[in-house]
Image (tube, one colour):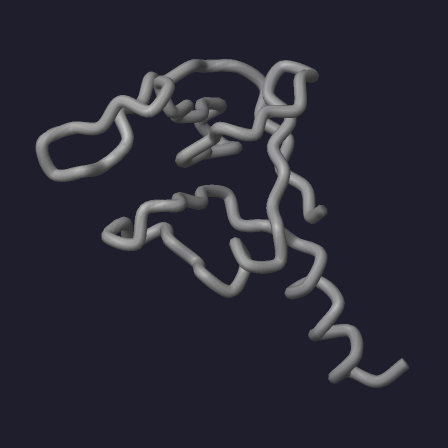
Length: 87
């Protein structure tokens, strides 16, 4: 193992503390989202997560197909245990 390999492994396996699907957000990471990120929230695998924060323990879930006047999905913030993983 070289130092280069050790430096690459955490980057591929470690997910950020906060991630958003909204391109206007400073927490948006398109490369990571293309790889596929799954979220377990309170032990249940969720597929409608718009944004999450592990350290603060919350997720924003989309509310059906409802959108605001700017075309962004309407969301509801829930608190609980957040566990992100790569698919």
